[in-house]
Image: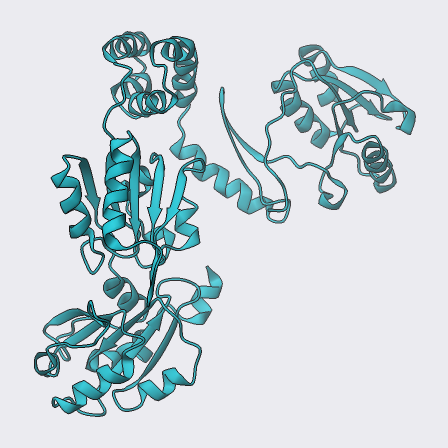
Length: 466
């Protein structure tokens, strides 16, 4: 993070703008909207800035800038076309620990102007640190479309009721839930449709019905998908951002974890071969105990909770103890990794069925129905099979699969670190042993693997472009 985002309170604060051209006028307008008391210093004052003098009560000093002009200003903007002046302004401001922006010169700035989406009192800002202003403008346009002006009126209504809600609902966690329901429910819809008086009446009624009690919490079993954050479902993202506690697995990527609420408690319960941060029974109990304490808990799992994710075991415990829960499916690794590797799991010329199996059982052995798995015209997908890869290949060959049957292993599928290694049952174990392959991985077996080279759309070139 090259710049730390902050919102400054500039109402009635003294700010200096050096320069009085068209660019300076735009900065003056922005500062004036924040209520700043603005002084302008320039040898020549443009008609645009002169027109702003009355409306924004500007102090105009028609002179050259000198270091003595800086005195007790909260913030300074230099918007001249003279590099010597800009450098002098930046140096003087820096020496006096005053925030300074030199337009179009990021190296001289201690702060920069972001692209602003103004829905006062809601303000959103986007910045590229000065490296890509056109991209910043495009992003602002996208955000403008999803934050209609009515959000400002909704924020104003929330501000009007803030103290009343605080007095009525004493517990902060319960207040947060109350506001989340209000701001995403019918009160918000009334505001968006222009019915502000009705919205206020409904909010008042909702508050009177609200009880300040320690309600039982809830658990959300959320599938985080195979790794790429943009493969999350809308529901998954919504629940992740309202949870009080996040209980997450080893296969949940840092990028996805970053999408959870910043102030949520995060508890790691990941499992690795021969090492479990918490036994499964303890995880089941932990989820139940957190919910009993009134917490909203996201149980974040890589892939899908019901495909080798032990989600069924966890909700059995929740049901036994009468705890509310939701299950949000995720894109399972088989689908995500196969798609991003250009390997269709089914294909009319190659496979009419697909079987999912896990590469290790409770005793860490690989003891599968090899006769069934060795049958032709199918695709086999093996989860968690890296450690047992050699045994898997040997067993399939021993039960009738041809030695040259195509097989692929996918590492960190769907992410920018994805690697796909292809071979045959006879050759792949040696290829993998010669390389530094680490979990998470997925194994795909069948003639569909031959399509990888032809259909490999998520190539290195594509990954670099995104």
